[in-house]
Length: 414
Ligand code: SF4
Image (tube, rainbow, N blue to C red):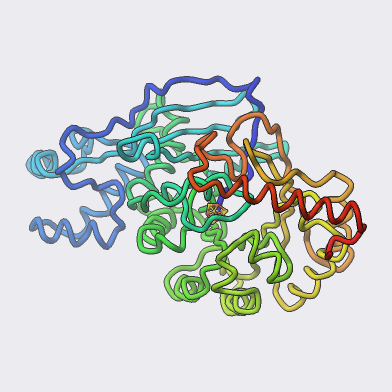
């Protein structure tokens, strides 16, 4: 899932990263960065150490942002020497970063060899006056196999899954970017919210994503509120049920179409898990237990594509589809990427769509865009990628043909 994360390139303080995130020259060492507490406990027990060492080391890594064992002052010199010998704390290599004056920050990470081994992470500050909320959009895969027709990442095809250290490393780097000059004892985590909505379908890299989210929630690591960690999926139904059993985090669905025919085109995984099954899975995900749960409602993401899914009848179909699902709807003005087969719906069209949903009692927001001129927007991560499959061109042709029929007949269903 790719989030909408836009800023103005004119405002960007673009830098080649002097990153602390330097890939290790000894990759055979065990990387502790992506280990959950239970994994770390097992690791220390196997070393002949007490379990509580896991919590200590986690705090050093994820709360004090220390990557050098020598700085871990509450760990004995003997154990530190042992850890240095066999382990490392390695974060993904930052190859590029943009820091905007409006607070948006973007990082490009290299997670392998070759031009296709790049992933992006974007941090967006709150639009409110406080600016206190800082939401990080994290990638879970290099590329994506799901080929949603409006998505630039989908055009790259799938390269590989990210490992837990590459996923949690994105959160580490984002937090660390605010404290590079801050003394260890005074370091505080800045990122308040995470959305698993960057490159890739997180539920198709389930174990690594689950492990990473466990670290996000762990009080010995980031200690984030479960309501502030959101997993966004295009609708891998069996994994939604699995997620409900394994962890309590907020769920977002990349819906983008209110009927199967259109969703089959925009989000092809719908052919495997059609809307009826997806909505039922969302209903199962909602829990009635406890007010503290993150699973009180589902967020519905809906990208607004000019003349494609933004008509009054689509809004009416949304009402019908979601009538029994506690949900909040987020309308996303489409950000065109090079060769994109779609355009963005007009402001009036988006507002009319919102009004229909709001009048029916739904909480329906329009995501703010702050510029279309850099490749940090929904479906644009990692810039202008080669369209290896020519899918974009095929889609453009198809949409143009449909628009021509609409212009001639005035009937979008023709
Ligand atoms: S192709 Fe679809 S599932 Fe994959 S990243 Fe793009 S929007 Fe998300």
